Image 1 (cartoon, rainbow, N blue to C red):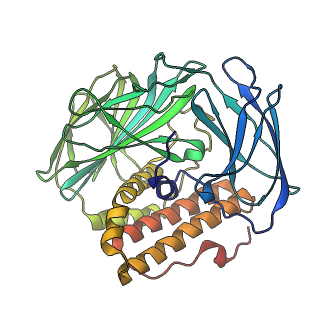
Image 2: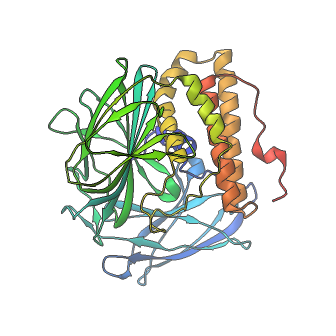
Image 3: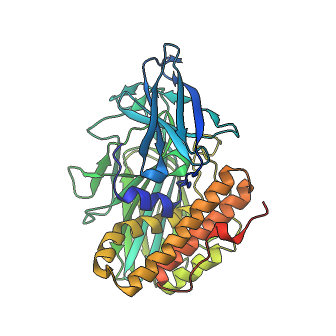
Length: 415
């Protein structure tokens, strides 16, 4: 998978990634494990294995090779209190897993890889969610799909693996796949044959793969005709509408109440055929940036749902709660707009103050990640406080300069 310059910013703001500060005291770390082929149900010999550091821009800090039984043993002088990933590339697809060291500097981690195929499997979307936010003269649309690969092979095809259709006239939709620890992995959408048709070549591994599509549409006339589609059948779909006062006309969706955390109006549909458009006409007074900022502040006070690390570890295939999705979407927009904004404001006092605040919040996110990794705070408290920090980062990005935040680690912790 290709990684772009936006990867680091996106991973920090969207939420799905853990960035840990490496310890200045290095130990003679030992990492052992096995690479196992989930397709053939056997070990993988002579397979190159890498130790990479997200904190260092996915830099390789050590490597090894598996033996005849698929086992590897890596010894190196690295900071065992930092966060690392073990990674291998098998049959053209990347596989990785987090490394957790014990107090003596030892870690055991296994990787399951799969053979790849270019033959399209019987793909099906178990759950989908479409979020429409009407704000001023624009409608922000975010679409999430939990797509199931029922085979024991990774589906990799340079001609496309995931095909979707959005409103014509949108040239650059944002697309990401949810990777390890819910880390958004930016993808490069390619245009299809018809206006509004796009596809990506992301390898769909066995089990559930979560993909995200985001774009903006014109709402200056205070109405939106939604008629997007994907090339796969959908078992269950939800439409979230913000603000909830918008009227929705659709022969497909039926009203299903309000979301208690966000106040969004929910609509539901089921058993959509492959290629069927999820059509709806939305109209009404849009929200404002101020209202959205206030909603972000209210989100900090709501109960935050725990999001598991593995997207296949629970029965419900769609694992990202609406709060996390909204923050991800805002992070995507920030990542896209940041280079242009930075170029315009380079060297100005406002820019320096802005970056100082944002850097403080990003460091706080890294601090709380490390506290959680060392077992000093509970998982429930970790997700609650991490999402609060991300909401504050979004508020800084949207509202501009304010009082400086104090780094999380400097507050002290009794956890």
